[in-house]
Length: 478
Ligand code: BG6
Image 1 (cartoon, rainbow, N blue to C red):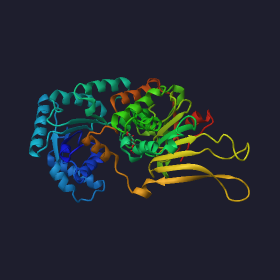
Image 2 (cartoon, helix red, strand yellow):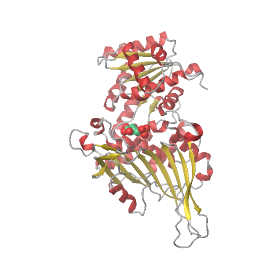
Image 3 (tube, helix red, strand yellow):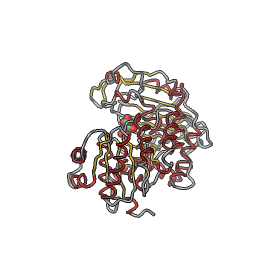
Image 4 (tube, rainbow, N blue to C red):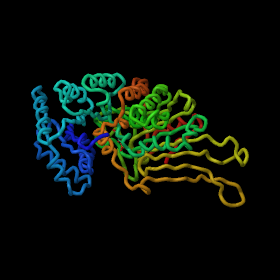
């Protein structure tokens, strides 16, 4: 059992003056610091900017207030818990950082527990991991945990190399690879929903399911980060991680135990059963000028410096070669500047084998629609007879919405950071899992399909519709 004192720690954020810290980490750290009976944490921001503690605190306070936190408690937390260290490039600088960490630990009576959080650009990660290893920042009297953001590598080879580099200094049990989708309450609920409701589990297979659709649609574009996005694209930015995680949770077998490695074993098995995606099962797109939610927006080509073939939309057809799912296609789709912001899974069941009304039966097959965000909830679509003499069907919904029952959901980062402190790796991606996920997309990363234009505010290029139409199916466009 974890005792409260076991959680007292030094939380070191590399890249502390960056966007992730400002938008997500600060607020999560602040809320964790205020939890009753929670961990006592001291935050040391590390960055290249020559800031002082005071400058960092002012910046952090402004960031928290801008996110809507009432001032109550914010100033006090910033004053008492936030520190900053400017890190240079020389070997002596590493030594200075180590001394600074140790002196903070002594001053605050911390037991040597350390979180080393890399909130830095992906190309700076390998060098920073090496520096940590060389200078021994990961060695202390308490536990040390390394947290890495996505993207983890840019392909299978680079992910493998990064894993090797990390394992030179850290055990896998110390490594927390973030996919922030796993911190979302609705993603976690996919597990409990499936395995706590046997009524669904018994139809969750090739006998009853016709196909599965996973859509993560964004109304936003690249939001001023066209330069870095252009080197990444939607396949690396969204599909290899977030959508693949959703796929694993939907398709996995019940774990032997509800604990991190048993669950992650089952997720890896799913990935091993997926055939690598072939080029003709993939559609890439890029948005052009259009209208999203009533607003005129520019095309992707106008947001990057040079003509670009980077995909801002991907649709894929995946097949799983295992007993549960053989023959059931999984269609994945994500894009920027689509018609609306929504993440949804649709499990489309097979139609009735015979219709009570004869051959021209208008009854639609049942579907379970799981909305991951926004308006999180579940809808089970069923057919009912419309009242009156003539027999006709209408589709109706059994509907559940989180917000109506539970109010606002916790933020993903707060959940994930708490799990880092308690050492629970369930919601983090294991080294073999990340490599298995890259393997699926190797072929289309090496030889990408043609990139088709789509109008901003649409549901993507028409070729994505054709991907399903050739099998007599169509996308659910909410
Ligand atoms: C990030 C991607 O991982 O996820 C972004 O890099 C994307 O491009 C974001 O916008 C979407 O996250 P959410 O939580 O807003 O759905």
